[in-house]
Length: 253
Image (cartoon, rainbow, N blue to C red; front, side, top):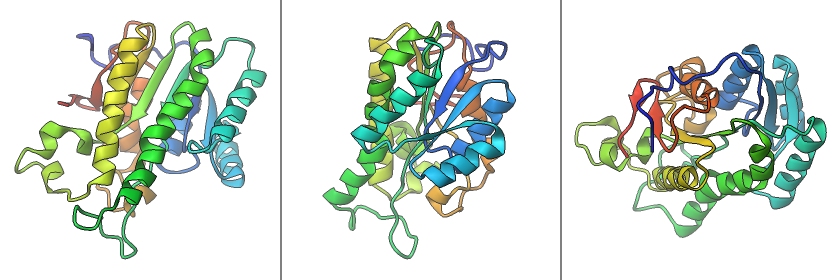
């Protein structure tokens, strides 16, 4: 599904776009939104907390958007807000960044012995169903764009190749719910890319970034982690689609 071009070669930085970043009041989402505003785009900071979302948007000159990806009514209201704000051109870029990784009370990763169906369901609700819910709801606005783009923030832990490769850091991760949800997200990405060939739809791996998601145990900064998200949010109409990218290139599924 991907072209031979690299993400960097396919990036278009000259045309201002209307962009929505979910889960953008902090962490990777906030840094992504900040960088995209800096690049000259109109950016909506999606946040389920109205006050935090408003404060984050004001800090970077973005637009706040109340958006809980796990709630149908919230998502439908967000679509109406973006549509009402616009000039009829719709939404150019959707960055599905909102995600969760549930850990035990003491902070340890919940492994196979402890994980329950309810834990799995809770994680999938945001990381998979939330992406489907938001993408489906915004499809009419994305279709109005001349060059629509969807970026799904995945993880290196979603790669079956890497997780089963002894000696690779992903192989040592004991969790079940989070990597399973991101592997499912990768499949959603591929199937959507095939279904909508006029759109550029890709999954990205930001790397092990220090955020609240992992209790700030990550080894890189949000500035480093946001690089591939920002890059793929700005791909042009001839850019790659149906791919799985890190800042260094494509990852194996």
